[in-house]
Length: 197
Ligand code: GRF
Image (cartoon, rainbow, N blue to C red; front, side, top):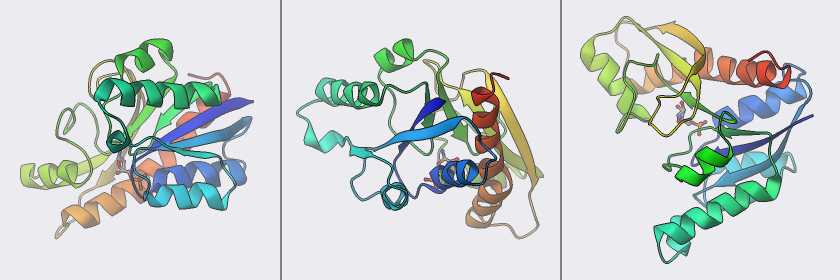
């Protein structure tokens, strides 16, 4: 049974996709053993609590400095003893120790077709605003392993969606989430749980 910890910062719609994937049997042999958020008001925590998933908030403001925050973050993850860590809209740069200790066991969902529109500053709506400004006709999402870089780890899955005339950053974000993110993240977890990656 693959033990998963999901790390969030906001709405948690990707967390919900994993919860639903397990509930509907899309993801087998896996369970979410914990959810960690860096924001105490993240709606994703509500989603986790509705499914009786243990939650932990590790918020930078509660610590005297970055080192103590990072120490608490690592301790929170270790406490769940995960086989896989899923960054689902987690907007904190991970401590290097975490990446070293959990090498090739951390995956991230990014709302573009990497290597387009990724790296520092490309998160949330910024990604879709940049894509529309460039005038791309295809957008999409990527699931990749996390390494020391930003959105630079080995790619696991990608899914493209069409950019439509009149799209706003919000409408494009919604389509990328619904048609790409919420599909490939559960699929990637299923593949990892089945030893296919
Ligand atoms: C998603 O767009 C995801 O691609 C990005 O951050 C957003 C998180 O959304 N990493 P949610 O919290 O999963 O709803």
